[in-house]
Length: 336
Image 1 (tube, rainbow, N blue to C red):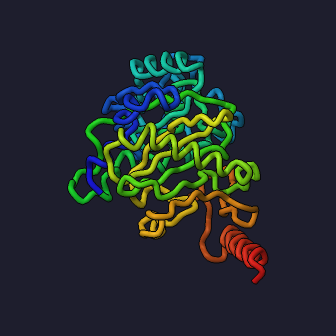
Image 2: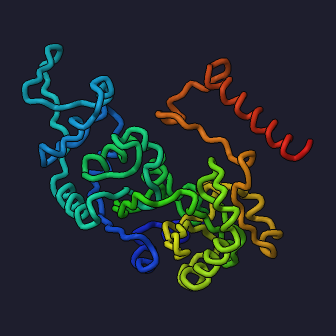
Image 3: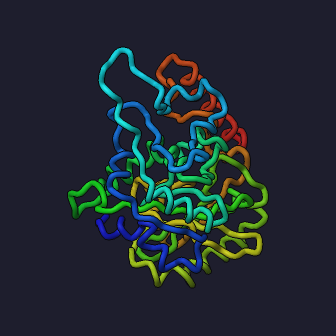
C-alpha cells in the first residue's frame, strides 16, 4: 500500500468531492497544541478548562465514584505534600468556540472523527453511552480516552511501502451530523479490488436482522448502482473499501472510505478471501443469515483491554464457553 492511498481516505480529502452523497459534516483543522494534548499520557487525565462554566463536563458525570480518573481543578485546592504549584489545566478557547458554533449549525448534536477514525472504543465513557456529542468537552473526553485513535495519531502509515513517516503533517476533526433514527442493520462495507467490486458485507456482524434476508436483493442492487454512479470513476485508488448507509427509501449515503489493508476490518469476509480471484468473477453480498451466524461480540460497559482475560480468569472461561457454544450451534445448524 502506498502513502497516497492512505491519504485519499482521510475525511478532509474525500468529503469535499463526495459531499452531495454523504452526511452533513463540518471539518476543523486541529492546532498542534491540541494534538500534543491528546498524545500526552505522562500524567493524570486532565480535561481542558472550558470557556463556559455551563460546559464543564465533570459536572455531568452521574456518580461521584466515577470521577476518580479525572482531575477537577479548583482555585481553593492545595497540595500539602508539595510546595510546587500544579500547572493550570490546558485550554483551547478558540478551537472550543469554533467547534461549539459548528455543532449548533449541525442541529446541536454530532459524532466526532479524526482524519480516518472515530473514537468508537470510548462510547462507554460518554454520559449517553454513544458517540453523540453536544459540546467541545464531550468530544475531548472521547478523543482523549480513545485507544483506537492511536492509529491515526501515531501509526497511520505503518502498512505503507513507500514512506517512513508515522503520522500526517496535519490533523483534522470532522463533526458529523447526528441522526438518532439511523438503523445499524442498514450500514454496509463495500470492498473494491483493482477497480472491481468484489464484496459487500453487513457492518453490524454481532446481530441477526431478519429484514436483511427479505431486502437482500434490493440492497445489493442499490449499493452496486451507487458504486457505479457515484464512486467508481471519482475515487482514484485501485483498491479500497467504503461504507454506506441505505435509507428507507433505498437511497444510499456515503459514510466513509478505508484503505485496503489489515487495519480495515473485513467483517464477514477474510482478507484471504478478498484477495482471491474467485471474488473477482463472483462478487458476494454477505449478511448474517441466522442467529447461528452471528459473530461473537463482547458487550460490556468497559473496553475489552480493561478486562482480565488471562488464563484462569473469569472472563477467560466466559470467552472459552461462548466460543464453544458458537461452534456447537454452527455444527447443529449444519446437521453435523
